[in-house]
Length: 402
Image 1 (cartoon, rainbow, N blue to C red):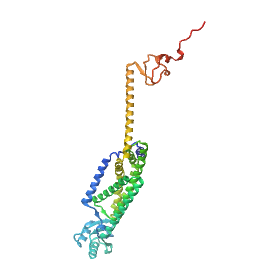
Image 2: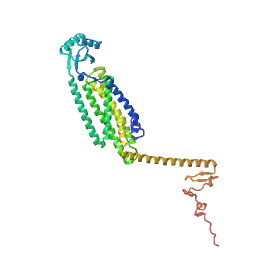
Image 3: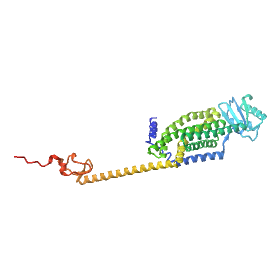
Image 4: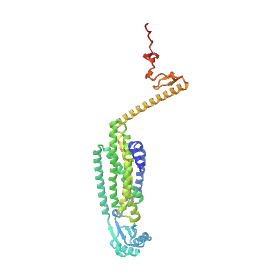
């Protein structure tokens, strides 16, 4: 844990850094592949809408003691009474079998109830049937679409005013569309049933995705404003630093959110069986995972891409790069001068003719201890005259008067 904390501190301080914004083409490619796979699933296989959207009949057999080969037995009981029906049989818990099939009359439903009761050796009262019309699912879909449109409009307005630029709102909306599209694609590829609970999950992941994106964007704004004032970093560099500073936080938040959702999903699939909890958990698990990816690797690179074309940003980046180039050139000159001085000193030492002093001036090679002049005799930048080196005490003595 201490190593992970140190890793987070290094990312925040800039000691370590992932080049997320600078490698945005790579992340665009990854995102394009994910979207392409999602479109293949949506248009190739299509979504598996539940009975609430397609309409039909649902029957449940409770208190079943013998669940051996329950799918085939339930299909046989239904197909003996209604032909050419698409039947889905699932187990709920340890004693309940759920059968979903197409539309049928009330008389056909009663006949199937009796056959199911006989097949699973339970009373007829333990078999329930309910007819669901497609109009209810259509109403839920329409209301969900209205809620989605209102949500996107409000998000656009709030982000535009809060961040004082519409480009942040556009980048956040692109990340949202990416998340929903990928989630729907996974539903289509895996054949997960789309129920009203799934629709609620879709709307929920929008809120989580926009929340995580706003946290990253807020740090981007703070860093870029500081960079514009100090002219120490370019806009992409400041945005990339913000992504690294919020990287560990985003990962921790996602893990904390995924743990309970994953637990519900595992328990639902293994013990409880299909139902509202499982449908909701599928949407939340997929959406939270892809939302974390998009807020880090998609939203911020798109924002930097959109803002790099602004005249103020271009001028700032050019000034920073020019100053940085001058500093690098100065450092290279200093290194070259130091290398020349070291080479000169090495050559003089090998020749035995002179050795460098403390101030970098070449001094006569000493043959004994008395050959080394005092340190006070040296003046930076110029070799003194021998008379000046002797000092005032070495002036000619006057003759004594007799």
